[in-house]
Image (cartoon, rainbow, N blue to C red; front, side, top):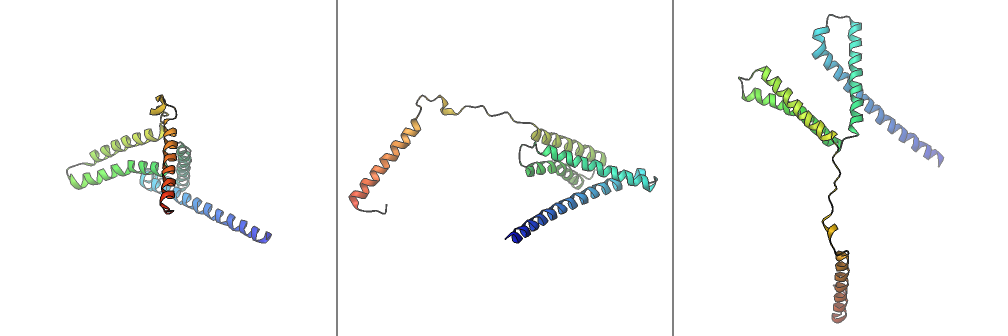
Length: 185
C-alpha cells in the first residue's frame, strides 16, 4: 500500500511541476516577444550603431522592465472589485476601441491624415483607460439602506401568517383524505 501511495504522490508532484514549467515557458516567451518587439520597432532605429554588448544589455533591461511591470500588475489585480476576466476584457477594449477607430477612419474617410488618427486614438485610449482604472480602483461605499419592513409595527406578521396558512392547508388535506378515501392527492 505504501508503494502505491508513494507512486501517487510522485505522479501528482510531476503533474504540478509540468504545469509550472509550462507557465514559466509561456511567461518567458511572452517577455522575449515583448523585448524583441520593443527593440525592433522602437529602439533599433536609434541604437543600431552601438556595439553588440550594449544592445544585449539594453534588451536585458527591457526584459527586466517588462517583468517588473508584470509583477506589479499581479499585485494590483488582487484589488480588482470584479472578476479578473471582466477586468481583462475591459482593459483590452481600451486598446481595441482606438485601433478599430483608426481602421474605420482610414476606410471611410480617405482625406484624414496620420496626425488626426494618432491624436484621436491616443485621446480615446487615455479616456477609456482613465474610466477603466477608476472603475476597478475605487472601492464602493457599503450599502446602508434599511430594509423596508424594519419600520413595521407588527413584529411577526409573516411568520404567523405562514404558520396559520400551513396548518389550515394540512387540516383541509387530511379532512379530504378521510372523507373521500383517496390517498393519491
